[in-house]
Image (cartoon, rainbow, N blue to C red; front, side, top):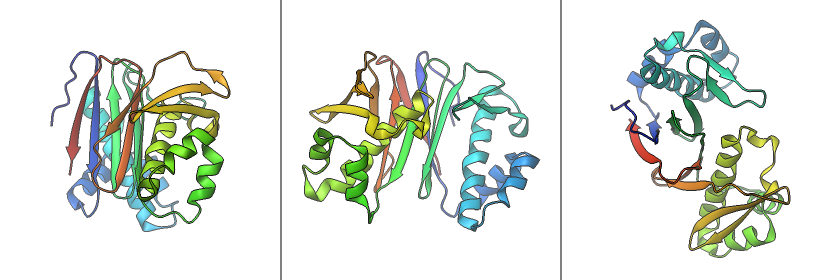
Amino acid sequence: MDFSFLNHAINVWHVSTGDNAVLFELCKNALTAKELERVSFFKFKKVQDNYVFSQGTLRLLLSQYLNIPPREVQIGRLKKGKPYSIDNPNLRFNISNSGSKIIYGFSFDEELGIDLERIRPLSDLDNLINRNFNSYERAYIAGLKDKKENRFFKFWTIKEAYLKAIGVGMRLTPDKLEFSIENGNFRLESIQGVNETEDWIFKDLDCGDNYRGTLVHRNDEMNILEMSIV
């Protein structure tokens, strides 16, 4: 595994959990006593395992970038919830998980946001579309009937990843973001009715069949390196 950075680079890690017992033990051993105690607070085993995988892998990756033992890595959270490295605040990172996959983004040069969604049937899909997208965006999502779910989840990861990039998460709801779409390219036009002056880049990530993922950053000269842990 290559943990080195090129100049102006973002490293994206794709992790498949599934029945990976070896990775699970590595992740569990990377957790602090406080995190291990928190595992028992989750009611369902699947949620417990997801926490071990996501938090443990984060510590393993941060350990390599910071050259610090996994359990000694210090992770903080900003006022609005965005995680950051206490050991080296210049190392920006973001995480998202869905289904049996997790994605991470790391960079010493660039603020970023990342989001992943497993494509799946939703009983309230139309309601979610109406609540979170404007009329122009709704028309795009419904433009190809057989691609409706795919387009919804793709657009959702775009909005969610952007909100994570600016550090507000879902405290600013997706319906407050307005996009234009041209030739499959997404451009953020306004936030709460105010024109957006920064050019954000919304990069589609190769997350495998039945998944959609998006990386958000600002510098179009960034080198994006995608790697996998299976």
